[in-house]
Length: 101
Figure 1: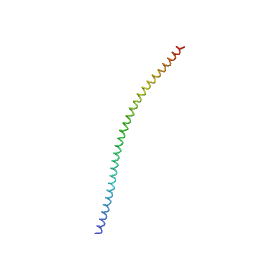
Figure 2: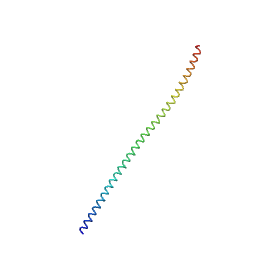
Figure 3: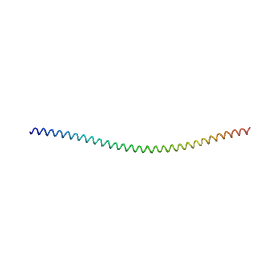
Figure 4: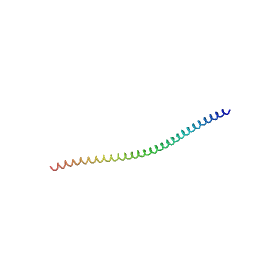
């Protein structure tokens, strides 16, 4: 009977040891999962901050393009005015040549 009790105690100790090891493994896995979730939240926050920065850069670029478009239009008007002045100058030169003959 004593021997059976010793075997039973040994068996219970073995099962208990397996359960403790299994629980330890589960705790480690749970800890890793929590840390991974924490890291995911951190990465998500960082991505959101980067997105806001990109949005600001896009808005700034859009504003710059709008200003460049206005400058381009003004330069086109100036080019047309210069072209008309050159044509008028050419006509005046022809008239002066004709008068000087």
